[in-house]
Each structure stands twice: as C-alpha cells, then as structure tokens.
Length: 449
Image (cartoon, rainbow, N blue to C red; front, side):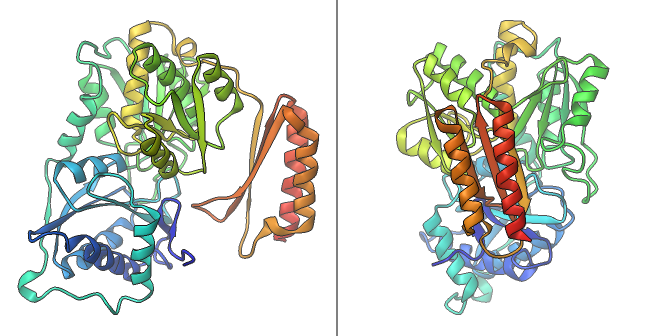
C-alpha cells in the first residue's frame, strides 16, 4: 500500500490542512488506540506530549478524544522534548507514546510521532496498519460509555525527565566553571535544558526560551544558529548548544563561534567510548549524508561507519539489529542507546560536555576530530510529480558522477519531511563539487518549472 499519511518521521504537514487536521488526529487516536488497547485485560494508557506550536492546542484534544473513545486512558504532559516522551512511555508502562511536533519546521507545520511501549518509534508495518484505518475507519469499534478512557495531566513530568537526563552525566563531574549559551529554539526544551545545565552548576545563558506559539525555530535553534554563535563570542562563553524545536537534535559552536556538526560530535563520542571500552558494534551508524571525512577518521581508529537511509528511525533500526550503541545524523540527531531509544539533544550534549570537562581544553580543540571533505547541499522546492525522473536531470547526475570518479560522491533524493529535492555533493575538489551541484540544481529547477 502506498503511504498517504506517514513519512519518514510520522505524519507531518501544514496545520489545519490535510493531513494535519483535527479530524485526522482524531482518527489517529482511534486507530492507534484500537491497535494497542486490545492487549491484555487491564486499563491501557497513552502518553501525549507536544512542543510549543500554536496548533498543538488543536491536535492534542483531538488525539485525546480519539484515544478515550476506544477506551484508552490519556496522560498529558504538555511541552516536553521528543526523547522525554519515549522515556516516559517506558517509565509509566504505557502502551503508546505520542509526540505532537514538526521538529525543526516552522510554526505553520505540525506532526504526530508515535512510540511503542518499548519507547521506540513504530515500525513501517504498524504505521501502515494505522494508515489503513485512517483511510477507512469503519471497522473501529468504539468503547461502551462505561469503558471510555480518562485523561489527566502529569504534573511532575518535567522533573522526571530532568533527573533522567542528569543521570546520564558522570556523578563525579560537574559543569562548574563552564559558561554555556543554550538555545532552545523557543521549543519543547525551553524549561528542561537550562535547568539541567544549571543544576550541574554551569554558568547558563539561555536564549530561545520565550515561546509564544508562533516563534518556534524562528531565527533560533539548530536550524538558525547565528544568534547563538554571536552570543557566545559576546559573552566570552566556552561553547553554545543549539537544540531544535522538539530537542531530539543538537549542534554546538566552539568558543570562537564556529559551528560543529553532528559528524564531528559522533566522531568525538566514538573515540571516547572506544577508549573507555564502552563502544559496541565495532563502529557507529549514520546515514548516507555523513561526510566521508568521518568515515576515514573512523577507519583510522579501526572502526566502521555503517550507513543507512536518511532518517533517525533507520539509524535506530540498524543499531538495534546489529548491536551498535552510537548512531546519528550529520544534522545533529545523535542516538545513544545506552540511555535513550531515540535522538536526544540534551543527553548527547551532556556526553560532549563530559569530555570537555575531562580534557580541560578549549572546545575548538576537543571537538575537532577530522577535516571534512568539501560538501555542498542545496534544496529545490517542488509541487507535484517526480522532478528527478526527467532525462536532462538524469544526464546531469550521470555526468557529475563521472567527473567526480573516486574523488567524491553525489546524493540526490526527495526529502521525507518536506516537498524538497535535496542535492548533495562532496569531494576533494571544492570548486568541482560546487559546479556539479549547481548543474544538477539548475536542471531540477528547470524540471520543476
């Protein structure tokens, strides 16, 4: 069955337009509730969290109505990071977890991410079965009045996650003496992230902590790091930490305001965990987007880089199947399965901070592990159809691959979360990579019209 609603990271779209309408959210609640409420003769529960988007006020009650209508109890936790929902789903022995968020997208969008009782995102097969009910929900049996679900707020959810995150940081260390700028993207971590860093005795400068429903990811967070970098330099801070809207990814800047991406962070964690004999799987897992410089660095350590399709769910699936405990994406999704079942920007940041404290060196030295190959990524927005199928586009791609040879690679794909064609090229020759990417972008743009 062709997937109509679910993409690579749940359901996502413009708020109040299909598929992100109250009606669809209601159906998701009924369908997912039916699928998970039939297990065992006991009351079933679902944990629902959200980020700070205005449309969360529309989606949350619609989901609640759907779940309670099929007999599931609902635990509402309000604005919380995505990894906190995965953690609370397991901690509360819930049957299901739901995060209402469009991650790094602007406030106009929203999304629905589903977690199973083990805290992992649902498989493609389960999502397909839920989607079948979204298309035809005639076989969903509603609960009798006496069996309707109940909804309640969990007042101490924030505190539970704060303690969980702090437990991942070595007990014999503190952040005392470190001045940290933390940018919470006016999103889900605007309370918990500064609190965790402050409780570990860092000197915390918080930005992006004044959400109003419309300013999530707006000129702040991991997709817009300029304000953070500037503030680090102005304040003479040791580093900056930028989270995205649902705090499942992070990027860091050093004391000079220079950005450090997810590839460099994964390299640092891999090297550190290998030296501590904590690294499993003989390497790490990342996606096809990760820089070749990372792969060569790991080879020098005797480690491997296993690549997957883009999307942290595919990284996690490969980690689980093959026994890895470190994985992630260049964009800043970092999955440390010793602590979390999904990307967790705050816990990843704490692992990086632990190494910085241990070494006592500037962040620019600690976090620079390899020289990346020149890499160019450009996006082309499109409407309908398949812009990559045209003969001119295919010829431009073939010509580019031929010119790069063994000194680089191309990756051209559709985004799984936005109507974009992503054109990425990397190689040892910066100007050649730029020229090839521009040629392909021009042909894709012409195809889009």
